[in-house]
Image (cartoon, rainbow, N blue to C red; front, side, top):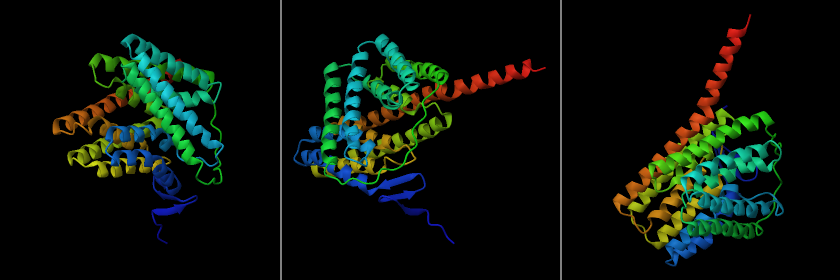
Length: 342
C-alpha cells in the first residue's frame, strides 16, 4: 500500500517529513501581524516593520494550549527585551563583551544543573544577549528591547481571543549533572567569548550576528548541534536570498505589508518543525528593516554577504567548542585508557 508523504496530524497540523505546518499557529501569526501590516500599508514602513519584528518572539513560541499557559508569551518577550538590552550594555567595550558573555553562559549552565529556568537561559537568554552586542548605542538597545517586550504583550492579548485546546503531553526535561554543567558551561562560555572577540576584532558592523549564530546552535548534544548548524546555515541563506530578491523588485507599501506579514505568519505556523526554520524568517525581516529605504544593488549585496558570512563564522566557532573539542577529549581519554590497560 502506498504511503503518502504528507498526512494530517492532530490539532490541525500538516506534516511533511521534518516540516510541520500548524493552521492554529498560522491564525495566531496572522492576528499578531495585523498591526504591523496595516501600519506599513498606511505608509509608515519603518514603524510597521519594527512592529512585525517585535512580534517575532511570540511567533517563534506559537499559540500555547491554555490561556493560563499563554502568559509565557509575556515572560519570554520580557526576557528577550531585557537580555537584548544587557547585550547592548556589554557591547560598550570589547572586554566587557568577552568577559560578560563567558560569565552569562557559565552562569546559565550552573543554574541549568539546579533549576529548569537555567535551560531557558542557555537556549534563549544567553543567545539573545549575544545578538544584543550589535547595539553599541544603548538607546537603540533599549528601543529594541522595549519593542520585543511590547510586541509579546500585544501577542498575548491577541492569544486570549483564540480558543483553548488539549495540552500536548511532554516529558519534563532532565537537568544537567554538576559535571555536565561545568564542562558545557566552560565550552559555551568560551564559544560566546570568542565569538564576541572575533566580532570586535574584525570590526563587523553587527558584532552580535556572529555571537548569536554561535550561541543559538550550541547544544550539549553534538548530534542536535549538527542538525541545528545545518538548519541555521540553510535557513539564513534562504531568508537572505528571498529578502534580497524581493527588495530588488522595489515593492510598494501594500506589497511590503503583505510579504512581511506573510513571513511572520509562516514563522508561527512552522515553528514546531524539526528543521530549524525560524532563522529564515528572522533574517528576512532583519534585512528588510535594514534595507527597505536603501534597496540599492550595492546595499543589498553588502547586507546579504554580511549576514551569511557572519552566520558561517559563528557556526565555525560553535563547531570548534561544541563538537571538535569534546570529540578530541573523548579520543584522548580513550587512548589513555587503552595505554594504561594491562
